[in-house]
Length: 472
Image (cartoon, rainbow, N blue to C red; front, side, top):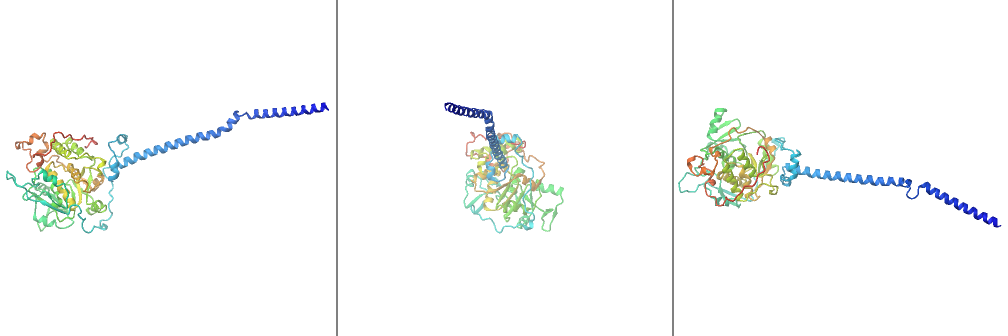
């Protein structure tokens, strides 16, 4: 009996030992908790997490790079945009723009680009009536030059005082300003041409007697039964008795004071003599005025945005007397004219003035008068005074400044063959103007340079200029 019990216990112990041995063998076979086989089973999960993290990091990096590139491309595009809002975002003076430009990533302005004009001039809808005058409603002109102690002959631009000039910038519903054409001041039209100009849809070529003689010698000029002179479709209009000593300043009379020469006209397109028109004038009016409900349109300058950049370019290229340009700019700087920046809300302060498209509203006519008064008072470089008048009118004068590449598509340019129009442009110092013996002092214009300016210009330092192109 005892032997059976002992045998039974022995068998149980042996079985338990076998089970323990089998369990140990199984654990050994499985490798235990940290065996290589268990690690090999966990590895795929860890590899998935590792690959996911790398992919997430790469995708995030790519998205971040694309975001940066998008911002940079938008910045470049805004600098090329013709819309004032987007152009105002551009900061051409930033280090980012400078680096992108040096890398060649900033596209250079196109010389010519397509113009979004209508296809058929016969389908253009001409607006009925005139644009209402809301700011300046009644505009009249001073036509008698004030008496002077020397009993000198009347001046075309009049002897405008500094006080009168200052008051002319304060807009009112009724205004009376200097605007050239003083009685017996010069630039008279033939009565035949005055009557003809009362018609509509005219092609008029305004010139002085020297230019007319040149044309008669080199081009076929026809005369109609009324005595009018023609070259093709262009009616020649002679301005007798040029009002200034400088031909360059004389050319600003028909250019800027078109509304005074042709008061019956509702619209006008001024084209410099160096330009050959390539587009139907009706399509030009539709594109630049009527489509966007503008009343004044002018092209932006190809290179410059600030008048101080333009002034520097004029001096460097010897287009006018350096001391006179400096004095002109010092007066503007003293009167608060800042260099152009996107904060101004305009595309540029400097236009390409070879083409001016306008409706002859009261405000536009006033702007033209004030613009001309600056040309009469200072230098005949009208691109320097355009932005100044815009500044003085405090944003109330609205205009459309279209891309320069469109300007080059409207016309074919025939460059000037004469760079200097008078000896005044060779002046090297203001001391040369203190006496009439030099023959350099213009006697009928530029009065602001010879009368005492009411401000102290000694401390005025002109803003620094970054030269952005070989041309300027």
